Length: 113
Length: 116
Image: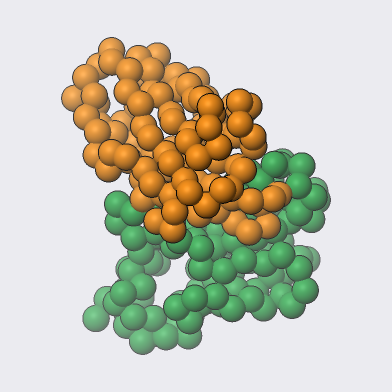
């Protein structure tokens, strides 16, 4: 994963529960992103953060929350308000204005049971 | 804002044959373009990127892509594929001016299946 770690790899959630997905990096990158991947829909941006203690909503933020208390950590909480949370979640990091592209974590597959 | 369209959702091909995965983008500003590969249940790995300069970009695993500004395209090619190239491929774009704060917009993905 080149210095970016997502955990757990698989996660099962009962309806009505909140769950938190972990994303940790040791590459000292400023920018961190959460994407959701569904078959045939590509990757859709949930939240992103350019700096500690600041984050912005992406295209599909409803039902999700994040925090950025430390540079190396950007956890994503999937709340009970997210009506269709079953998906593959990817965390990514980059430097600068994006010209380096992203380094991705290995993903967390969340399933609602 | 930018958008990306990958013109084929699935591309089947025989081993050692050439392949082209098509990507068109839309943007009112200059862009950076990327191709990523994803193997099952894994994250995405950068194949190559276009920032500026030569329109033919070479990447890892023998892949290359050509930026065509007039046709707003960034097609990915490989002259001879292997079974191990079976994966999903994503085209992505961000604006070169940095106003997107590094956010990438991704296409829907193309599943490349290489048959023996």
